[in-house]
Image (cartoon, rainbow, N blue to C red):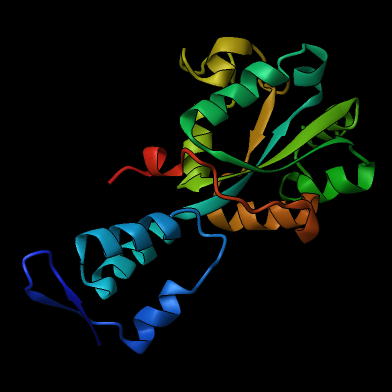
Length: 210
């Protein structure tokens, strides 16, 4: 327990339980920790309550894999499409240009093995370079999928990436993980841990909001 003085001389008790202390020092790369610390100091709020709010927000922080496929590279749409994700507020945690091997393609599309379009998927993703991205943010998987749009570019809603830039089902520019579980597996397949970068964007408090 610590005691602080308000400007009027009133003592204010701020409970710092063992759990709060552990949470306070937890996850050094968590982008909003410094903001919460400063707010707790300035407004003299109970640290346990503030840290509980941080924990709840962090539970919604996700990583997702996004692939800008060979058609995206050849059509020179990389900048326009990456801009969509960044302007939404997703943080870039990893990026690399890859000439996809047959082996990697088979692992990535293993769920479709045996389907009529499986072989054409492999041929397409290995036909040219692919830009692999790891994006991070609040509910990043769902946010990225909503930005990407429906699989068939001809049916995707205007304003989505596929709705604005694609007409094909196969040549639809972008892949995005479809669940947090698949996102974790796909990130691990495409990236080594040391290829992912953790940092705190300066605009984090403005994007996170209240």
